[in-house]
Length: 163
Ligand SMILES: C[S@@+](CC[C@H](N)C(=O)[O-])C[C@H]1O[C@@H](n2cnc3c(N)ncnc32)[C@H](O)[C@@H]1O
Image (tube, rainbow, N blue to C red; front, side, top):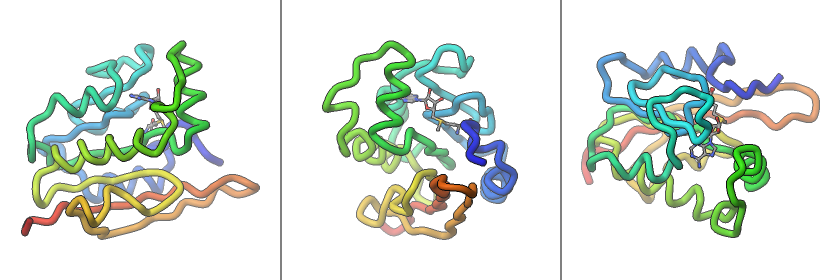
C-alpha cells in the first residue's frame, strides 16, 4: 500500500541507502518526518525539520555545486500540491499548480548538485532532473502498491562531470 512516508517503504529505503553516505553534503527539501539527509526542510512546521520553508526558497539558499546528494520527493500532481497547501492554510493559485512548480525546483536542484552528485527523484514518471539539465539516469525502481494505486517510481541520476 502507498505510504505517505515514502522512504519507510522497505525497498525504497534500501535504494536510498545504496547511494547515500553519511559524510555526504545532503538535503531533502520535502522531508516530512524523514531524517536521512543532513539538512531537512518541510513546509509543514509540525514535521520538526531543520527548515520550514517553501522548498524553492530553501533550495535557493545553497551555493552552486555544493551538494553530493539530494532527495526529491515533492507532491506528485497538481492535486497533491493543492491538498498540501489547503491543509496548511496556504493559497492555491495558478503558479502553485502549473508545471513550472516542478520545473523551477528541478532547476535549483540541478544548480546545487555537485558534478558526480546523486539525485533520487520520486513520482509517477522517470523524468527525474533530466538530461537537458546535465543528468543521466543510473537506476530506476518501480514500486507497485496493488489495487488501483499508482506505482511510485524512483529515479536515480548522477550529474555529469563533463559539462
Ligand atoms: C510526498 S511527502 C514527502 C514524504 C517523505 N519523503 C517521507 O518519506 O516521509 C511531501 C512533503 O512535502 C511537503 N511539502 C509540500 N509542498 C511543499 C513545499 N512547497 N515546500 C516544502 N515542503 C512542501 C509536505 O508537507 C509533505 O510533508
